[in-house]
Amino acid sequence: MSGGASPTEGVVLQGTGGVWQVRTEAGETVAASMRGRLKQEGRDVLKLAVGDAVRLEREPAGEAWAIAEILPRRSRLARRAPGGAWGERVVVANVDQVLVVFAAAQPEPNARMLDRFLVIAEANGLAARVVVNKEDLVPEAEALALFPDQRAAGYPVHHTSVTDGRGLAALRAELAGRCTALTGPSGVGKSSLMNALFPGLQLRTAAVSASVNKGRHTTVGAVLHPLPGGGFVADTPGLREVGLWGIAQQEVAACFPEFRPWLDGCRFGDCTHLVEPGCALREAVATGAVRAARYDSFTTLRAELTEG
Ligand SMILES: Nc1nc2c(ncn2[C@@H]2O[C@H](COP(=O)(O)OP(=O)(O)O)[C@@H](O)[C@H]2O)c(=O)[nH]1
Ligand SMILES: [Mg+2]
Ligand SMILES: [Zn+2]
Image (cartoon, rainbow, N blue to C red; front, side, top):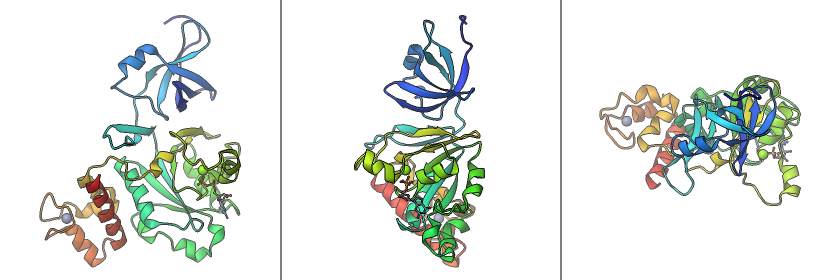
């Protein structure tokens, strides 16, 4: 190794035009580009993604940082490439959990859409938790009654309001020290929530972007935000373009965790759980052991994959 600054490790926060923002171990954010050699080797080996842990080195001549090595990933959130190609695109690497945010009102909560996000998390092997924000807009009893089927399936549901502060401390504790992929429909208060949880984060909210960035909703690529006490939150706009995720039809049932105990009990080993006699899953739905609404989400999502 040549002289100069010693190598350091960091986490990739975002990238545009070949320059990546990397958060170093020291808590500094630096710009770094991929080592030329690594770029060539990595063409089909591993593409750098937001969330990747990397080893940084100083470029031989000068002050610039280079990404010398991508460290092994412990998890990833990926989806099919846009345009229908089957190549996997890693949206965020090293994710610990997915946070799916809905609003109690404005916009109306949508359980079917929630199931879609939960299946994406499960297909990636990631734990998910649900947030119902804007609880100030509806009576408490109404909010607590939301998403009963997903609660029964075992997903934790947080109840929050940016306006009156309820639920924020409990949610903050769940995000601390972890890498969380944040998703949910637009307008539910995701950015407002993160700003309220972590003052100083300064994510752009609807109120601001309306004036600054007229009519433009899509951010390209995920951006990782370092949290003050450790951990990261990733804005993952790509997950909203649902229907693009690359999961095999026969995998969908196992993406509903409460279905799993039944899936080995069907008469046919390759049971689709749609029409076959002796389907243990459909029997469980008939007896109420599995909730019909979740089974309906299963058939809907599975049918979508047929078309794709
Ligand atoms: N009443 C109420 N409004 C909220 C709450 N959280 C966010 N909002 C408002 O909802 C709108 C959308 O918020 P934003 O954070 O941009 O949503 P995002 O698109 O999910 O990031 C903004 O006008 C916020 O002020 C809340 O808890 N209660
Ligand atoms: Mg936002
Ligand atoms: Zn079956």
